[in-house]
Image 1 (cartoon, each protein chain N blue to C red):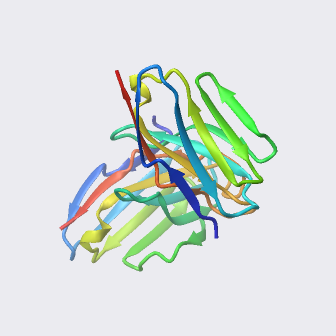
Image 2: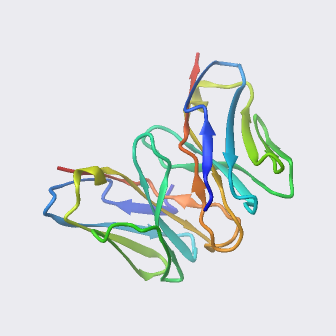
Amino acid sequence: GENVEQHPSTLSVQEGDSAVIKCTYSDSASNYFPWYKQELGKRPQLIIDIRSNVGEKKDQRIAVTLNKTAKHFSLHITETQPEDSAVYFCAAKGSGNTPLVFGKGTRLSVIA
Amino acid sequence: ETGVTQTPRHLVMGMTNKKSLKCEQHLGHNAMYWYKQSAKKPLELMFVYSLEERVENNSVPSRFSPECPNSSHLFLHLHTLQPEDSALYLCASSQNPGAQETQYFGPGTRLLVL
């Protein structure tokens, strides 16, 4: 089955700097890669996703890149703000009824 | 914030108790999920229901028993749990289980087993 590895497990950046979180997956048939943000004490919420027919997707300060050949995808947050502090989860999903498989999460701290 | 609701939000139970977690989705979705979230572990999928039929069961111990009476409601019945079952239990829903779609999560039930 699918296996998703996420790095780093914790990340601290200064406000205004960029943050990058990387994930690798094992199943070459995976074709959907969402990213979720979970603030302290709150539920995970989708912030951006990418499908396998696209190499990059951007939404304001957030971007995701996908390298299907290398089987890795990354989340990029630019101009970080204190409210970006949260745990970020990547996930990968194969075709058909295969479920989403999540990474272990990255705790991002943005220091003002 | 009211799309997927869960009750109770917090639960403390002994190992001999029986309790149930409830999830309700108001999004008109066809698929519902139970996840377990423990510290320093990835979200673990426990059960998937599609149109009230269980389509995924990730070898979860029998002390966890799901029930899906209709497409809007999902329960997780708990009995004779172990301390290692203490975790945040998250419910989620999506339009269909197999499509590339967003899953919407509930706020979770934080469970402590003594």
